Amino acid sequence: MLLTVASTAGSVSAAGQSTSEGDWATWQKDLFGSRYAAAEHRIDARNVKNLKLKWAFAYPKTESTFVRSEPAVVGNTVYFGGSDGKFYARNAGNGAAKWEFDLKSVDPENHCADRPPNSATTCIMVWDAPTVAEGKVYFGDARGYFYALDARTGALSWSARIDTHPYATVTSSPIFYKGRVYIGVSSLENGAGRDYACCTFRGHLDSLDARTGELKWRYYTVPEPKRIGTWPSGAPMFGPSGVGVWSSPVIDPRTGTLYVGTGQNYSGSGGDVDTMLALDARTGGVRWKNQVTDSDTWRMLCWDPDPTGYCPGLAEGTANDYDIGGTPNVFVAGDRTLVGVGQKTGVYHVFDARTGEVVWRRLLGEPQANGGQGGIQWGASYDGKSLYIATYYANPGKLFAVNPANGDVRWQTPNPADGCTTGGAAQYPAICVRAHGPAASSSPGLVWEGSNDGKFRAYDAKNGQVLWTFDTIRNFTGVNGIEGMGSAITGTGGGAVISNGMVYVQSGYWPEYSTDKGHVLLAFGL
Image (cartoon, rainbow, N blue to C red; front, side, top):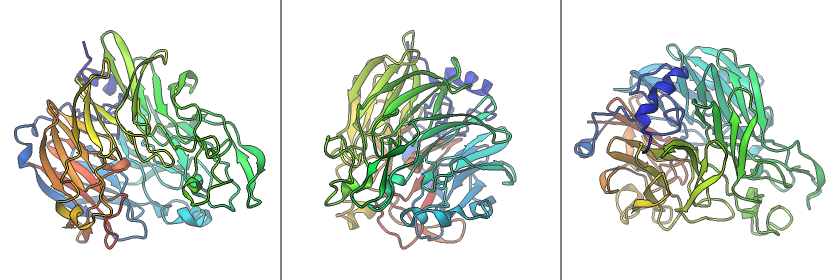
């Protein structure tokens, strides 16, 4: 017997997340990471074909136009961050303004000015999704700050610079549990050039007091870097380093265990590289950990025409970037609680949630070594019956329904063959790829997934048939009075949010189809 997500709602509520079942208050949707809108009863497989665009919000044109902040919806308010360094609260039904918060109001010392040039343009923006709990909105930004705002007014309750490293960033979306928020921290240091003294960043997972921002505990994923040599440029070499926490944690409230995955080294060797961590949510103590890739040391210089001496894993063939970028799913099969997670190798791993023992593994996508653009990128969805898992660059990417008990594939649907030859993507044949970057989402009878071809699709949960498609590579006039344009649907912000008869998605991430305008948040309803 499989535990349904709906039957876990009482536990989630008891953990202190004061929202209704119809809300989508956190990237993970619930503590278990289901990404399943169990209470959705208006949109179903019979009427989804009638779904229409209700409103769009267009971001102003900035130097970086990427949108990565998947929205949260609580009651009649949708919360999301933009590429323009602002955070917004809008009416969920019609997009009317409620309030906005300017991230530049925090940090009078302007730490972005200290950021290395290759990451300065993406410094002040929200790269994760917010979590709404107990009257506050929690989120991080691309410069390593974390915020708590009053959900009703947008007033700043507190902020904290949770990492002072000049390359630190937050792509992990927070989760709220028993008065604390949990957040992972990574960095862009692996993009530094040849003359940079690489590398000194240490990935970590933090537990913060939700009322004050006080750090309760921190788990570092790698030992403190030390001088280990000299790069060919003469710059000092430090290591081990990196092992960022790119993905978002989940928590099993029945045991108080937090689960999260980690990334690759930047230099040196050691640490919890490409590892699933199971930590005590109260203390940060390790309950178990399972490393799914033995060695993985990669930085962006591995892409250079001549990476010799600057790509630490090149000689050993370990320059792969095979992060666990996916957020875990906690579920029950038979009498056993399991935790599963997708990796950029294309493997979905399932462990015994108590011991970390591998229960099953299934290769679903193609690994793309040296850059990690293949496999499973950001996460999967679980509706109490099937796991829904999408693959990225896989010639083409596919959406799978998988038996959670043993990994058997129930159905698979390739990214449609006309994805790059129809709609706005047809104008960009050199850019378009049939690949699924976002985490899958689900609601009763439906699975939702966006694509690099700019199409947003709803699939029949029974057989994988495409029931509805919307092309986002077009111009939209936003409710905020400016014009924006959709682009690829991918990254942390590309996952669908289904709440109270509406569906929301961000359109506008790599690859860019156009940068003449800012990109868009789209809201659909019947």
